[in-house]
Amino acid sequence: MQKEIELFKAQLRKYNLKVTQQRLKILEAFLKAERHLSCDDLYRMIRRHNSEIGYATVYRTLKIIQKTGLAREVDFGDKISRLEHEYGHKHHDHLICLKCGRFFEVFDPDIELLQEKLARKHKFNPIRHKMDIFGYCRKCSQSINQTQRM
Amino acid sequence: MQKEIELFKAQLRKYNLKVTQQRLKILEAFLKAERHLSCDDLYRMIRRHNSEIGYATVYRTLKIIQKTGLAREVDFGDKISRLEHEYGHKHHDHLICLKCGRFFEVFDPDIELLQEKLARKHKFNPIRHKMDIFGYCRKCSQSINQTQRM
DNA sequence: CTGAAATTGAAAATCATTTTCAATTATACT
DNA sequence: AGTATAATTGAAAATGATTTTCAATTTCAG
Image 1 (spheres, helix red, strand yellow):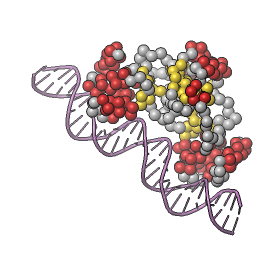
Image 2 (cartoon, chains in turn cyan, orange, yellow, red; image 1 turned 45 degrees about the vertical axis):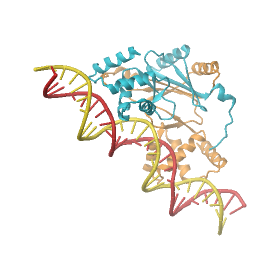
Image 3 (tube, protein in one colour; image 1 turned 90 degrees about the horizontal axis):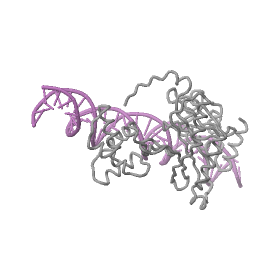
């Protein structure tokens, strides 16, 4: 985690941004957290513990954390920005359960390869991609009892 | 297009929803449109032509259109809901240009197969999935001149 | 035709996100 | 260490898409 903090500081300096107590606390809170976090999640976490840090500051710092490459946005289809750790984490895709909302991180090198090929076939220069599979996890698959409704 | 309209009407009846002029006009406008449309896009289109249909009605009807399986939501990462035709359209993924915003629909059966396998390997029951590759299209690849900025 | 139930649309509410701005703080430079 | 300056903070307001409310209107089964 020290490594990430140093990287963050270095990036701040590089862009003439100041190393403030708030920014460091927010980064640490983010790094300590395991799950995918929305801005609101993180704001509450920080607030719960001790510090008085404004929502706007958390919001703005999360933007910076993204830009430094320490986090990336993930999208669970609910229109809420969530961040997950990026630094030191390999790329992965998601299996997202439509019932319980849990997600699983997965990776398949063959798919990655084919994605590259697919893009190249279309003269497209891929930078990043996102693959989410929605469905039912093992537990929920058993207990599905959907009431079809409109 | 007649087929889609009949299907829509049938679905409405099935769920005790009424077949109104507004709903039909909105569906037709949607079906005639080629591109991916946001609620706002569609509202403007309809309004431009003639009809006086409220935004709320467009919004609500789009939800119904989704539920009937005639449209599905696509996500270009900008937090705006856009719908694309679903009925009679095969599943596909997207190549989305980070510069000009254009997108390309692509499909690769090998990837589809591997996605199924991947899910099964994790005892996950896949229902649908979403794969978007972000990068630069042919035209934009040439003229990239990004100014690195924070 | 008629009544019950659904729909409409204008306006307001919601909710995440983003900006504003005056007060505060970090940092480079004496 | 002191100071100037430029960035940051945080409360509050603004934004913008989405969603709901509710009284008036429309649909449609009987």
